[in-house]
Image 1 (cartoon, rainbow, N blue to C red):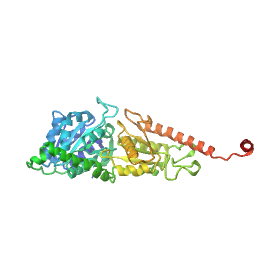
Image 2 (cartoon, helix red, strand yellow; image 1 turned 90 degrees about the vertical axis):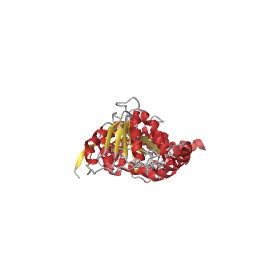
Image 3 (tube, helix red, strand yellow; image 1 turned 120 degrees about the vertical axis):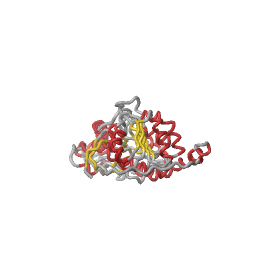
Image 4 (cartoon, one colour; image 1 turned 135 degrees about the horizontal axis):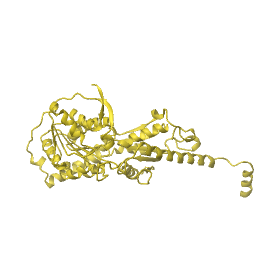
Length: 397
């Protein structure tokens, strides 16, 4: 397979086709529109049914019918379109699916071409649907395939939440060999399964709670999309830290604990890429970073391990403080002595897009504070000698 420069939305389309998607339905809206356009180019080869639906609600209902029969389905829309689709999507959360269903809801930080800056990660929690948050086109390509597997494993729709800069970014990746889609299934009538009476809703709610509060947090804590990165390899080149420092870990002269860095970092989505580039430019090495690729259900075990190792964590994310809120909740519930900073304390902008420059500036300010604190602690620890020591002895005697 030859490598090509692939756009984020094309990567999502190719990932769905690689997963054998049978039906794709959606409604156009930047930044998601190109997904269906790319899929339609290959539908004659794969046999995938593709349609622009009259609206997002209709797209969700068309996909639901195919999924009930065992077909894999993809629904595409932008974040405000998810509002339109929310009625059937909320019901699908409870009734479930048979064939894998992935809902692509593209968020638009800025906003660049939208009425709102709403965050699909919050809708994921509200609707009780698992959510993937890609940082790059390649991640989006791989995540959409894993989302289909997860959907069929737990019989639930799964959200994929790219943002504008991921949708429209380009990355070099291998163009996959596309094969005919999976054989469509047949619908089997089962009123207990597909008719969401109150009793069935109650029982499904208990099952969903168990899945989202216990099973998936443990599973996602081991997922390759969530990890703790120590970016020592990013220390080559770039500018030096103030006073010649190349690490933010405490040194013996600063009196810092060997188990704790003065502060660690956390990020998700495109903000993770911005953060890693900013660290590289600054020449910072040995900086712990928690990367979150599945914001819901949150990987609690991994996050707890990270929080216990640090005194302070600074969170970078666009739109709502979803990662930040989860970390605050965990520190409180588990009684972890770790301060969480980000949007709530005003360190990170509350609205709009982040960028490499914005994050770089914030890091520079935090580094300067740390250097000043180190110098203050160092001078405070110096022994008093000479005439000043004599004066102190006389005054105390």
